[in-house]
Image (cartoon, rainbow, N blue to C red; front, side, top):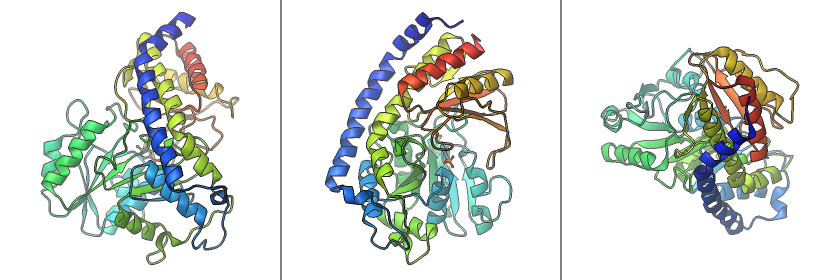
Amino acid sequence: MIRPEDVRQAEEAAAGAFSRAADTERTCFARVLRAFQSQRVALAHFSGSTGYAYGDPGRDVFERTFAAALEAQSALCRPHIASGTHALAVALFGLLSPGDTLVCGSGLPYDTLHEVIGLSGDAPGSLKRLGVSCDVVPLAEGGGIDLAALQRALDKPSARVVALQRSRGYSFRPSLTQEPLRQAIAAVRAARPDALVLVDNCYGEFVEEHEPTYHGADLIAGSLIKNPGGGLAPTGGYVAGRGDLVNRCAARLYAPGVGAEIGSYEPGYRLFFQGLFLAPHTVRQAICSAALGAALFERLGYEVSPGPGELRADIIQAVRLGAPERLIAFCRAVQAASPVDSFAAPEPWAMPGYADEVIMAAGAFVQGASIELSADAPLRPPYIAYLQGGLTYEHGRAALLAAAQAIGPA
Ligand SMILES: *Cc1c(COP(=O)(O)O)cnc(C)c1O
């Protein structure tokens, strides 16, 4: 039985995280607002476009605003990028050529990238089939980047691109916060000034006061149905960073020559602008929900990562549940606490791009949007639930209570 004082005490334990999230929101929001003003965003930019959409002012001003908000020189940020995986694939194929080596500097990349790269399976069109090889540098003990091993991997003359992942993904490692990220980029520069750094920024946007581009990353990529869409963007993804590299990615997304000059969107861009405007606030709601989850489940005797007071570089809260029944009960409770599809009971299923069966609670307004409160997990020991998102703290709080009631103490 979860008592009201358990929740109150958990909120007290998370107070430091709440106040840090408030500070971060203020910093990020100021930058987002300046971006809107410097680009002179106006009502006319919300209108849609058709056909080729040459010179589409809504699309172009949105991309410039987005770039400024994410501390990037340039951005390709569009509804035509269908997901985070697609954005990362566009970035990888934009940067790498046959004969090159991709170095994954923060251990195995996110599950859905394995087939893109060719680390698993033999999907047509993978980087491997293109003749790009991949070296994975395992994380050091404790989950940080092994800088010496990363530099050794860069001895290979073909090493062209270093991919780093800011978020923990489906793993119990810590997320990559600003200081270790800055050190990793410095280590790459020292070893190989000609190598490019691509950061998988999924779940990381607006979680800390600066984006990886500020710390010298050449390119970042992510999804608009995660943090930077603010819960309003209906679809989309982005690649942002150095202008020449963004152009190379645009040539992959569309066609060489035309690049980012084309691409229409008839419904219009208001939800993208408005979502970006809300994003620092939405992300704070998600961080506060995650921090409460850390404190509450720690009180109940579960191992959590990060802990309630730990620095975060993403919005994910991992809770080690230890048993498949608990994992399923946890996800069902989160689903039942959702505004949409609350009556549905999630079942583990074989999701495209993932090696293990995955169970997912996602009672979201936008299908699969994980900036909305969601819980998911691959069904593999030690049965860790990954909880993220929450458009409002009150929703996160209510769902966490329900999940705690459903599984009880460890
Ligand atoms: C979500 C995510 C992806 C993939 O994004 P999708 O939109 O699910 O395709 C890649 N990397 C990380 C770290 C993610 O969190």
